[in-house]
Length: 247
Ligand code: BGC
Image 1: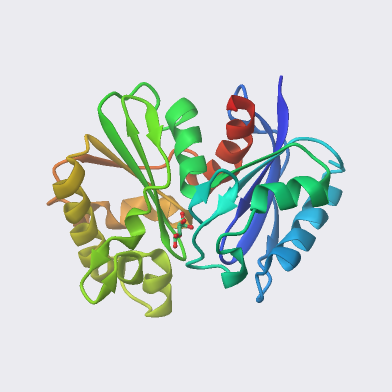
Image 2: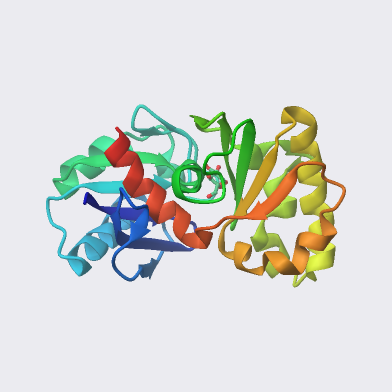
């Protein structure tokens, strides 16, 4: 068994658990702390240290899913996180400060990896697109099982701004929308993505994947099959840990 601490950094919460990366399962409860209001590298690091302490995980492997474009260990975007992360050598920073082996990947790519090996995308050929619906919208695209990282479909130009500003779960919550109302935008965004990539399967993740039965019926115009992420909101933690093992 290969055990790795997976940490999923989100705009509202930072969650961790120890993962059996071979089975793609959490072997501890999930431990969640709030993302600091000022989510700078220094403050996020402090939360990570608390998570590491909680699991008594000093100096051991840590896989981190992060809501940014990740390229060669640098965080290249900062949509729902502090601007200090822009062009920041995050992987090196965490490695040094946490004195551990670190793998940093985009949070939605992390969720995609666990669904690809152990969840809704397991053994699925063709084009699979996972979207995480949370504060923003993250994406992971697989073609015959191969991940194309950093696709950022939530930032597709849409209406007056970008897709995640209309169809993320945070928009539904903030405006107190009924699932039926919110789904109008979600379906439009799915149709837009379908037009670009003709996927065979959409997987919807994030916290709202638990409620998939409430809005599934409003997405009927989409040709591709749509399912909820099997690992629900835990996919990000599990995939972040798995990514380190795959490296
Ligand atoms: C970020 C992505 C991230 C997504 C979900 C977006 O705003 O640009 O990198 O995957 O939010 O957290």
